[in-house]
Picture 1: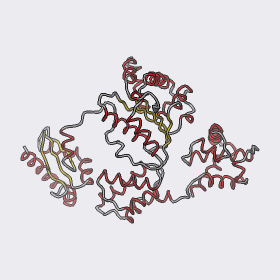
Picture 2: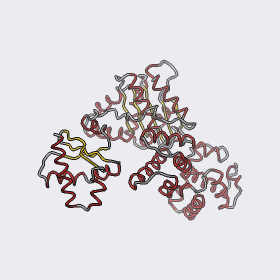
Picture 3: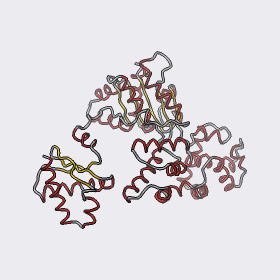
Picture 4: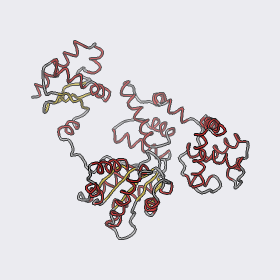
Length: 444
């Protein structure tokens, strides 16, 4: 059969040579660039020299399959580009779909621990080793993980699930986003199979629900989740929840749900510090088998501070450019490839003190006035603007912002943000223009 596959592939190459220029053929279809590696179950496995060639053949797969079918008059034979032999095994023996939506790649071993997340990591390991249904006291239930986008919440949730599955494959575990939970609920109502939906979630040993903030304002979803939560919790089943902010800041969530979230263990995950960012990049290189020098990793880690996704995305951009352009990864090359991102990061580091300084100057008041107890409008209103800008341009929580402005309550900050948003929409006293000016100064 392999001989048959080789004959077919040679015919494909001959057709391409007749219809494409030599530079194109040499780049993507020379013996060095790509070759017929194996023919199995009517599939031509074409091994590619690098990911650049792989991606090109993938993008042109329909064209190649069309040549086989329409030009060579060979039916039921398709092409599958690969980088290594392991991909053949995956295609020939695809893994059984994991109905619980748990991703095997997210484990505690692949999670990089730093000052910003070590407490969260420790608690998550504890939950995985001692879930609520195995202990009589000191259970972390519900476990509530919160923090900004791309900081590792989802990774830790899957890591817990994977560790539990290692302990006992009979555990009934499900990971679901709040959006998927909502969509399944809507479908169950349409199809009139509510009981099946409820049985699915209320018979679990462990429920992991991601991005719970998205059920805010969805009354039917909140009602259903409330009863699901109660059923599981009353039976000592483990519940793990993630959100982009702490329970007390989920202001449009029903009080009864918010109080249940607050009754458990809320754990904050902060943005990684410099050392952790470097470690994350090194871990990524290790997993993906990429050889990239420390000076390039340090360049990325120094400039990309917001979250792990952006950090790894920058690394992937450099790696992809290197492969596509066939050029080694150097400090200068990385600087050029990431110049737009690095330029944005060169702006003055935004913090509360700098925001206060710019706002105070714009409104001709003292910086200390913004943190004082003074309530005259000429001070109170700039203070509200400063709080609003702090909320928009920093990752600080409402309580932390309130603390920075004279120890004010988080509800005061919330009111200030709502007030300024409303004034911006109404263009009250052209405040939208003034705030745009302040933000431009802050970002300059």
